Length: 475
Image (spheres, rainbow, N blue to C red):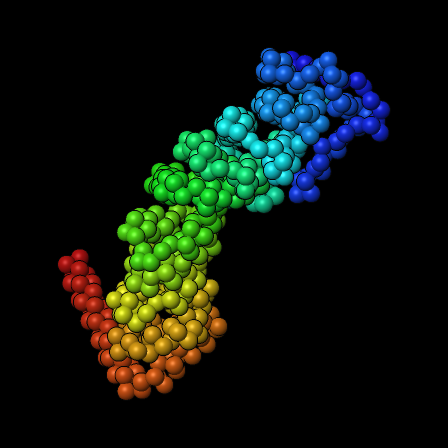
């Protein structure tokens, strides 16, 4: 059971001094009638002895700005100790007074760190990071799919919201202000925001609460930008999260947020690109197209992929072949996403790289054009509306038209959707205008092949008829 120790005399409601609350923080109602005045009686001096006597005691302490400079460090540490006390936030009534004291203390600390009015020494920074770790690094509740056995991504209305979030948000805000503080000495801070701290932050990205993941994304990005010594470790840590997700669990809530961080990181890669960055593309980013739930993070993934191609156009061939390797066979929604991404990649592809992969690429596009799902066929045909892609096709039409002609003809005479039929006709006309002689050659070859195929069908039917006659004679 937590005890409340009242310091100082009780003052009227109008005399109570409230800590300033930053405008970015949520408004939490406070029962002002129950507040304790923060004036300190001289005889109740805050000393190191009584500040560290019982860390589990939640006591009302004076504001830091109201005590002498010589005592602020001791009082700061005592306030951090109060904030280390844990509460059950699923019960809003239990320990309400202690929770409010802790909330006010966290709010004061945020304002203090943000303003930079109190220079923190090493001990204070160590205690601050310890308090943040105590509150944030916890076992996450079981994921909803573990309780329900559901396979799909949850709807927005069914999203899990942590009941302790109003409290956790203050701790995250304090960490963010600490990392962003201009007063922070990175040489000192890196001892406490170390590799262990970063790994635990990465573990929290699996939280089901999107508000928590948004804070984690911002904080980890700031740490990456400020602590150059941690950059390779953070990248490796994110890689390991991806590897576990791709090859083991296929379940993780924070892949999209981690990819958002990487999108900014990739944008800052220097040229020529290091080999480790290219390996990251091949071993982690491209295989992220494999999981069934790719639609949950595809937008961020596509951005990272196109950033690589924009940085180094020579990677386009590797990316396109990687997409073809994981191309969906029966998932039409996923195939539309792949076609969207393919167009973005092709926009940054140069002729030399395009020539290397055009044969497998247009064989797959031929299958997509013939898809019975009209959205897949339509999206594949829309590629011919892109001027850069049409220019690449025109330069390599002698290699492409023989591959794509047959799928176009099948659509002209066999596809059920009228819109797909119209788009196919437009693409067919485009090839005819590019090179009428080549078009006629392909048409002649197609007609001969079709005639040969019909001849094979007739031959097969005659063979079966002979077998039936022979079987009837034996019978």
